[in-house]
Length: 112
Image 1: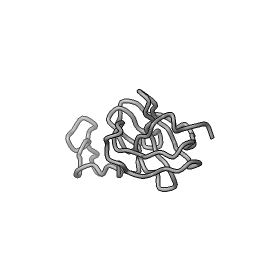
Image 2: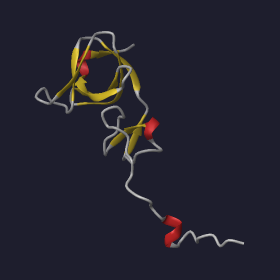
Image 3: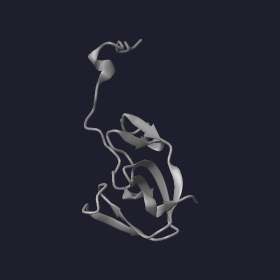
Image 4: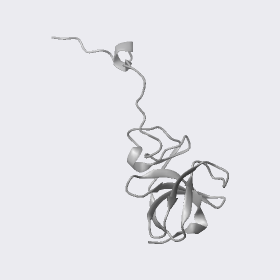
């Protein structure tokens, strides 16, 4: 009969290489917060269930919560947005069918 590694032995915790994290452009995770759908893929301090919102006013999706930050996409009125965080006037989450992750002014969002 084959001997199984002890749970305290090195063999019981062997890692086989670097972690393959999902693409952060289309998977909403940061060090402090991640979408609950990614709980089995990334480590974050907190996980949040996205709140369904809709873009009320056309807005620019940005890489960081600043008007000077890199523009990632232009969102049009009526486009869905899954919001994971809303602080200091900026909403963070993902938009559209391709799930583009970024920040936009919270005032540009409304209830679906």
